[in-house]
Length: 445
Image (cartoon, rainbow, N blue to C red; front, side, top):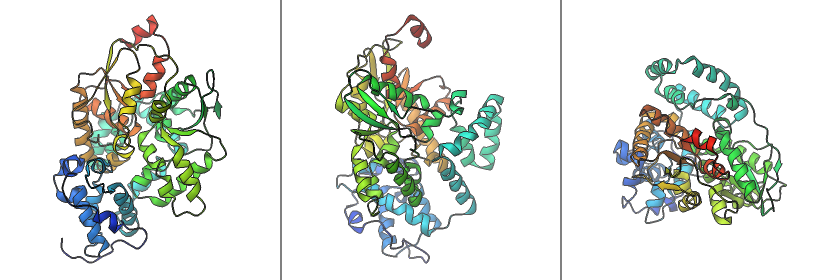
């Protein structure tokens, strides 16, 4: 790359040169990188981005529009971290790069406004919920296809946002009030905290409710701090570091004072960020220790249940046998290195057959708000992912992340398969707690 004038990285936590130097440029990351596979450019690969980080650190290039675009195409799926034989911490490198971009590069007006809209709304359920009423009415009017075509001409990004809206039910529109403490059924084995998430509590509240039942039936007292908000994953993934830190501090404070054996999350993208709190707040003198203690207790709910074991008996689901395909969420598979635990839990359900798709480790294109910011790349990945899932011949799909769920739901609809159900593992375990009845068998056949 040629020398250029203009702003580069500042001195506040730039990508660590030692982490950059760990890359030996072997190229093992290329075939695992979804943006490289779609775009086919070295500059849109982990190795290419590390070259650019190094050049920016040394002042050889600036944060031009072209350079920033190559970082923007990164999904942050972390598949390259899994694939790297040298153990390069690309996750830490891209996490350090994105705040640099947000501080030192001025995006165009439309891009700034669109991003501000996303980060003003989505991490705050109390702001987003009032918008669900007009959106529900919009869906009832049946004008979505017409509006979508108009938006595609005006703004592919707004069209992408509209297309990801799941079918809304009246129960989605009303605030959910849960007890602060839900006692265990039978003898208490553990006391656990449950994080409700921000998008999930609005668009898939049944996942949280199923999780509560599964936990309590397996000897867990469940604590739901009423003050909890967003974990900060969405802004953190896109370099909105101050917002992410503020939300992280609020989350730590919300769970302070409870004597908990574990803090559980049901959305894997959130889980990865929650486990990084010790790093995110590592330089905050008031929260450094508290954040590290909090992060040490965080577990994905599937991780926790696999470790402590299920005690409640499970019954066959309808139809029996039930054939499902499991979709690995990137931040569970690559970020938290959890692959077998969800499968081990699900295979304890009698009569359930679990299949794996081709290219299982490839990102679906959701990746936080990536499908809102880079809709063309995200759509290519989503189409591939859904085709691979459907090719297994399964009757339904299992996904443990709300972003993946919405992305897959969209592409099922686009491929004429909208009736294929998507389940969170906790929904399946919850259903398996109850013996099937003739009415249930008829309803789910």
